Amino acid sequence: MHSYDYALLLAFFALVLVPAPWLGRFYYKVMEGQRTWLSPVLGPVERGCYRLAGVDADAEQGWKQYTLALLAFNLAGFVLVFAVLLLQGYLPLNPQHLPGQEWSLAMNTAISFVTNTNWQAYSGEASVSYLSQMIGLTVQNFVSAATGLAVLVALCRGIARRSAQTLGNFWVDMTRATLYGLLPLCLLLALFLVWQGVPQTFGDYVQALTLQGADQTLPLGPAASQIAIKQLGTNGGGFFGVNSAHPFENPTAWSNLFEMASIILIPAALVFTFGHYVKDLRQSRAIIACMLALFLIGGGTALWSEYQANPSLNNPQVEQAAPLEGKEMRLGTTASVLWTVTTTAASNGSVNNMHDSLNPISGMVALVNMMVGEVIFGGVGAGLYGMLLNVLIAVFLAGLMIGRTPEYLGKKLQAREVQLLVATLLVMPVGVLVLGALAASLPGPAAAVSNPGAHGFSQLLYAYTSASANNGSAFAGFGANTTFHNLMLGLGMLIGRFGYILPVLALAGSLAMKKAAPVGESSFPTHGPLFATLLVVTILLIGGLTFLPALALGPITEQLSLGL
Image 1 (tube, rainbow, N blue to C red):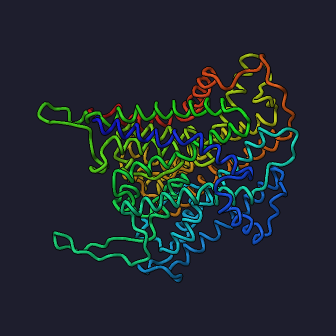
Image 2: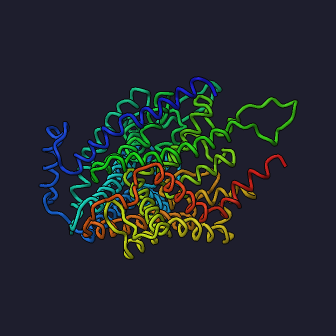
Image 3: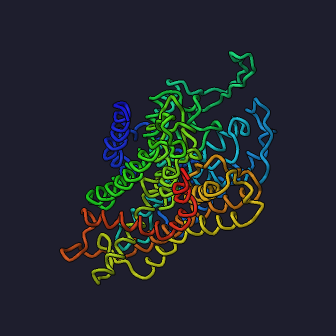
């Protein structure tokens, strides 16, 4: 590694961590309807949205009403995106005259963007019109991220409130999350990306003549606006087929840095938002310390792996350096690895290199980041409510070890809460292992694997892990655009999204109704190094016990076979 690699790492962590406490407080004030510096500008817009939609901003909902509103909103979003993709050949803003998508692909894509996964079994510039990108995919990038933020806020209120029957108003939370939480930051990032050279136009694709005399089509479109929200909303996906490896999506070192930092900017800030809800920022510091520890473990391992020479070429006559297969020369190894770890630690899914070409251990780090439930920062809202589930599990285990009824911030965890926690533990195994086993065992679906042996199994395992974790990145060698995989991966995305959201909202409702006992000296502290260590061990233990056999068949076997 060179000095500029260390400068990149330092700048990345500074951009993420320095504004996090301030931004976290801002999100708390926004979601609770308190006045902020944006209120004079956006306050009238917010109130106008309520009047237009007929929403009473002062009427709160119980967890069941909150859940029904969320499900109805997401169903409407799915129907809209599905219809637009099917009919895009007949709709305007389609300068390339692209036909509508095949029904299973359209269904997979609609589910993907509604669930904040952004898995794409198609190439963006060759399959999706400008209109579909804007009113279908970009809109869902905003509202799916806002949905995750709304669910997190509902859980925070459930933990913080005492003897309460309500969790807030879903429509109000969605409006505030979108209007204050996402739009201003996206506007700033989009303008920055346009300055760096990312296209933002309705113009036709450009026909160019290369230096070799060949014809080349240069895709354009309203890219900067979608790229901004795909990163800040932890959506991922790509306006163009090769995602952020494309020079139009990621043209410079500055765009690479800011896009990468924006992936976990909001998830890191929301950790401090939680601290403001429970009136104890020590809880925030413990959680973010756990996230950073897991991030650094994975990042350090992946960096070490990618800087190793290929043992298959171990020969005195062969001069070797860090392998650059599947990476952009203009970005280099460190920037590629850092993006890989960041995008899989968050439920983002954008890439600036091809994960299929990573060394086996680096690919395994990306897999593990997703398998633990996308809790290492994770998605907007989704990462923290997933981490809080692990916090409650760690509290339960601590209670078993010391022989006390487990409690968190004064609220006892009883049978109902533990049952809901156990239900969330089944989400990833069902999505990854059950659906993945079906895909691997049936001859037709298994043909989508392009490589034999352990690497081929890793391709399939990665696809179903990415779908169930609502990540969206892929081992590019996997041919996912078949009816079977479109439907099964779509099912995995639904399980991975709503398999967490429904228990989380039920848990929030249950906790909100409880009285809180004062936290005394006999209570197990959940803000110190001991608990942070227990939390890290709990996450790794649950993930290891669940997925180690599958990892052994894929990246571990592949690593052991190198050089043989």
